[in-house]
Each structure stands twice: as structure tokens, then as C-alpha cells.
Image (cartoon, rainbow, N blue to C red; front, side, top):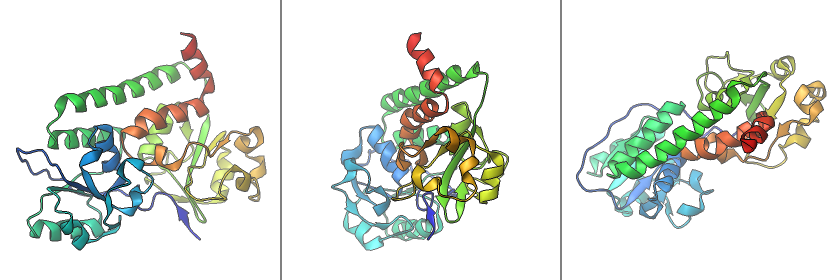
Length: 288
């Protein structure tokens, strides 16, 4: 059975349009976990009245109505909530919903979810602008940029860049390629992504590719059970991989921390990667 954590969360989206209005929205339906996390980071979680089931992990939106799957939002449920703003993605299933909701005179904003670090910052600013809170948005962006700058500083002078494998799906295997924000995160945190030369955001790979790449650090950000580092050791031929031999296999970060393109990814996910890829840099920083 395929276990791909990127499905429903990490797809690459199309299109963007912002509809300018003078009044800040009070009732928001958010159709992507990344939008939820941005709204929460901006202190706007109390305005979220509807989310998809992909946001069930967020306690801050526990009371919000579930309006269907990320890939197929329920039009009737959304309309019944009487939102003054719907934040949607350009994914095919949501694009159709957005068009229907717009035809019903609801305000729909489709954000560009091109997924790089700069795009995450731009998306955060877009949402902050919609709600008319430039000071709060800029303060959040300043924290995000500071985290990135600090991480780059800590890794700039390090003599090595360990080979890193991020397994975003198994059976079959998927990882993060050059076009993904996770690849950027690994690079910023001082690692060398073994799939960094693959020009796809989340490519399917073979076990032989991983074995031959011999990663020194492995991350397993799974949402399901029985797919942690203990199971990894049972894979044929993997016992000689450097990361497994030295015990540098990590399944303790949590999938949502490093797979959702939001401020939390940068503020918490990036330091978590740095701590595991270069623990010596954390020790050096604490001594400064």
C-alpha cells in the first residue's frame, strides 16, 4: 500500500489572484493546511470557520467545520458556513470548487503554492495583506528570515556536508528533488540532498538509488505507524548504508513540521533539521 505523505499536502499548485477589499475577513474557509498554519502564526485562527480533513492535526482549528477532503471540498458545506473569504489552491479539484463558489458570489482567493522558501515568505505576506496587518506580518517574516540567516551562518564554515536522504513516501519510494522546498531546507541546514540533481519536486526512486548514494543521515517524516527506523533496518541491502550503521536515522520530528510549506516549516522545521544534520553547530552556537 502506498504511503506518500506528500499527497494532499505537498502538491505543486497553479495560478494566483487576490481580490482587494477594504474589510478584513471575519469568517474564513481555508482549503490547505499551509494556509491554516499561516493564519495561526498571524494570530487569526479564531477567524477560521472551515477546513479540510487534512488539517485534523491542528488543535487550533479543532472547532472549525470539516468541509470535505483536500482534493474534493464540499461546496454545500462551504456555502452553509457563510464565509466572507475562501482560501483555495489551484489544484484541479479545488479549482473547480473555487469556480463554483465564485459563481455563487463568494469571495475566493486562489494563492500561488509554488513551493520554495521565498514563495512561502511571499504567500505569508499575501495572506497578511488580505487581513490588513502589515506590522504583524512583517514581524513574522523577520523571525523567519532571521532563522534562515542564523542557520546559514552556523553551517557556512563547517568542513563537511553530510549526504541526506529524506523519504517522503515508501512502497514505492519517494523523496524530495531539486524543485522542492524540502531540498532547500536540507541545503540551508548544511546537508547534501542525495536527490538534489533530480529535476522533480518529489520523484519516485529505487532502493538501489538510495543504497548506492549511501546517505549519512536519513529522515523518515511519516504520519503512519510501523514505518520508523526499526522497519528501515529490515530492508534488504540497507544494513550497510552509513546512516543505518551509525544510527543517524531520524523519525522523531513529525511529518507536519517539515512537510507543510508554512512559517512553522522555517521556524521549527529548519532548526530541527540542523540539530540532526549538524549537532556540532548547535553546541557551537550555545557557546557563543
